[in-house]
Structures are given as structure tokens and as C-alpha cells.
Length: 221
Image 1 (tube, helix red, strand yellow):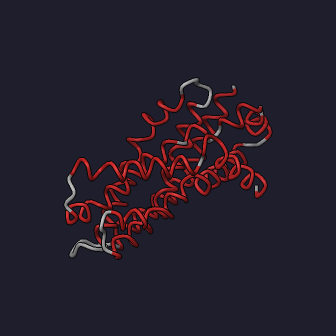
Image 2: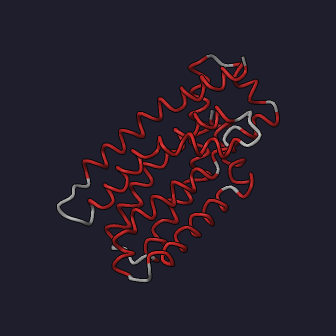
Image 3: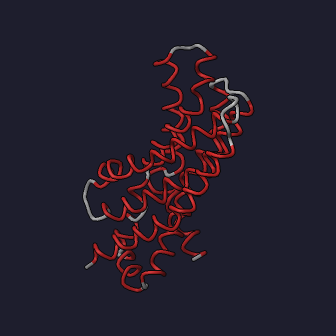
């Protein structure tokens, strides 16, 4: 599994620009928002956590179509599906999800504090938003794995993945933004939505790979 993890990190970085493409898109969304809402620094600071979360969500969706694409193109996807039982296939999908997150999404989390400074956010808000992104963005990848497994054989699967995945990520977005605001806006709590966000990620770490494994196995039947 470690070899698969390292291989997929390399693929996620190289394929289509990988992490660089996601970071550039993330930066482009953040840089565009002030033109729409105006240059008022207090307003940007107030809506900063929501902007960072929405931009990260869209950037995460950008590369989900590549999650199984390289394996399908070189034929290794069929070997993974046919050569593993149901539980091992789910574990393999989980490994691929973690590698995809580390190679494509983690750079967004690292860049988030710098973009928070760009929007004049308070240090507490920047730290809370970065922490919630660190905990919550894996959930988006786990949800996206199921969508990517359904759409892997389709010629334009990227659009279908976005349509399938985006509505399912709304709870993650809600609790991520709520926890970020809770760190800077009394009396809103931080811990409660943060713990719910962490629980969602753990739950989806099980459900997402299992659903993706079932979709992949069904697709080869």
C-alpha cells in the first residue's frame, strides 16, 4: 500500500499540472472575489472563511476525474478490481484517496493562510480556517472517489463528477465554515461544529471508499 501511495502522489502531481493547477485555480477564485464584493477590508475579513472554503471545494472538484484515470488508461484498474476482494479493494481506494489528497489538496491547505492574509482575516480566523480545511477537505476527496468511480469509463466524466459530488459536500462546507466563524465570532462555538466536521470525515473515510469499490466492481461486470 505504501508503494501505491507514493506512486499515486507522483501521478497526482504530474498529471495535468496536479497540485500547481489546483493552487492556481484556488488563487484565481480568491483574487476574483474582491472585484465582486468591493474592496472593503472589513467585509472581506468577515466573509473570508466562507470564500476560502468555497474556493477550496471547487479546487478539490477540479482534479477528481484523475483519481482513477491513469489506472484505467494503463489497464491496472482492471487488475486492481479483479485481483482484490471487496475489503482489499476498498482499502486500495482509500490509499488512492489519501495519495490524491496529499498531492493535490494539501497544497491548497498550505496556501490558505497566505490567502487569508490577502483578505485581511484575523490570525485566529486564519488558523481556524486552515485547521478546518485540513480536517474537512479529505471528506470531499472521499465523496469524490465514489463519483469518480461511477464516471471513470465516461469520456466527459469530469462534469458528471461535479454534478454528483457537489450536493453531497454541502454538509462538509456548512460545518467547516461554521467552525471557522466560531473561532472569531462569539458566541458561536468552534469545538462543536469542528468535532462534527471531523466525525463526517471519519465516516466518509469508510463509506466513500466502500461505495467507490462497489462502483468500480460493478463497472467491470
